[in-house]
Image 1 (tube, rainbow, N blue to C red):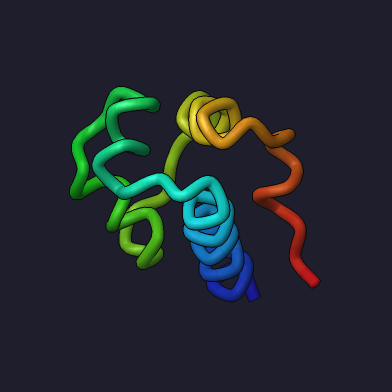
Image 2 (cartoon, rainbow, N blue to C red):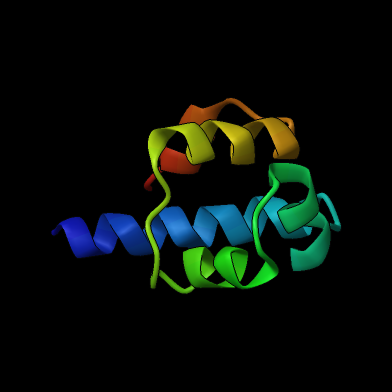
Length: 71
């Protein structure tokens, strides 16, 4: 069950990043992390901590709760 939520979170990060037309490199720059880390988040290989989740949401100019919108 939690694995599905992690995958949905990852898909939401990618979806909102692409809606902003941000490359993974641009996203990494905005949240101050390595480019590969963004890719790993989007592939559900790494799980960001709460601080990083808020940085991601801020960079995407969305409320953090949007990243947890699992329909």
